Length: 403
Image (tube, rainbow, N blue to C red):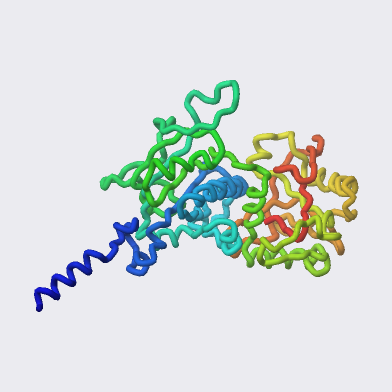
């Protein structure tokens, strides 16, 4: 009888579907619940980074491109985007503020991002994947022969690295490099891909050419937008809602200096951006005020003579506002110690001449900034068209304060 019971148990165990037989695979860091549910084992992780000297706005734009790639991947497999921690940016030079390992939640509202694509912070990735290891790092580059004249062709190829990658193998044959300030992070494999095309051109490589569970795309700025200016582009852009603590700073500034609130201006704000109506349906909330800021130090120092001074900009701005039928208001600068600050008068609807210096974590939102030395008043004001990217002045549509 005992022997019969043993045989029965063996047959029952053999008939139980194993994780590998059902297409599941065990990964370091998984729990038994993960294996049973299959959720963690199926999910793959997409990471990315850009050229280190690039600034905040370019990095935000690259996020939109990678989000489009992730949507393409999600049509076939379960992927999640790992948000690259902020830090070590050229324009962030405050020595008394922590400059690395800054999570996205310090700047953006993660629930809003997740309404568009699945995203997680880098430290959550470490916890889920079982450690600070990235299975495959692809360094994206152009083609050594360049783009030949003729019809545009989208293509991607595995090629030798044109320049030596900024990664080196340690004694354990792991790759070490700049991983957002996480010195313990290692790459298991590093190779180069020459790319020429939109972001989703790399999707077949990720789906068919590698079985790596975590894949990092370094120099992701080499990928172009899939559909620049289309619905998908604007869905991602709209999902990048600033974090609540930053919006509080902006609301306080609007109320105190611009006599502006959502209620007073009739701004139909919703916490869920997918429920927000088009600004065109908002009566009276456009062209109420404009914000102006000069170029950064790198621009003014390398293009001497191409940008107006503080005084010239403040003198020309009222005319610009009038030309675009914004309410007129006087401009005034006040010297506060060694800081320049904009001091608006009552009902002021414009601002000019300040440059952010502190950009980090809950400290973001300081109103006192050091001035940039700009050329004298002998140069014409550049073209300041409404909505022109990277122009000196932009019209703020609704309750937005540029941080």
